[in-house]
Length: 232
Ligand code: 5GP
Image (cartoon, rainbow, N blue to C red):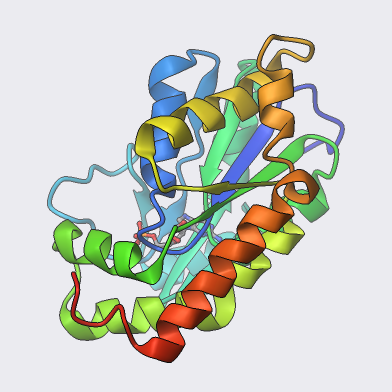
């Protein structure tokens, strides 16, 4: 794959429950020139998922063959399963002239950026608080209590501070606002000089850093006070 692309590769990452998936879907629903990168994974399909639509579901042997054959742009292990971005899937979408949006782990985002530094823009979605993150994970009903606690601990210990390595950062406290803002970022990248460019600039990492740091400070205070555990 050439690393000099005209297409935009927009990578959205953040802790599980930050709402990144909802925001990414909003772009896909509203911008016909965008398309989702469909990853390969070894995790089992959820009851509503379809092979080739949500993921390409692979056995471990098939996935490891993809790694060996150079079939993946990047890959990562998350909670014991492999996840990876397929060269073939992304190449086809680029050839069709589409802008590709990715919902991948934080190390995955860093790898796509390293490989395609000019085409890739990365967005980090921060949760407004751990109490809200926990509430979303509980309402999603896809994890048991222990898994939710592990996800939260991982978010606090290893994820939230990583926003500093991203191009843009959003705090997903008001969903309508966050949707509007992610669309502004997408538009400013795909149609430079559009009316959304100024709005998007507010969410560039450096412009937004003060607000992001306040959010992180609040999260650490919540942890110290243990005030998020039983409020879901
Ligand atoms: P889930 O199992 O909930 O669908 O996804 C688990 C995690 O894997 C999410 O954080 C998602 O962003 C990440 N993920 C999905 N596909 C890929 C991929 O191709 N590469 C990487 N690095 N992460 C992925």
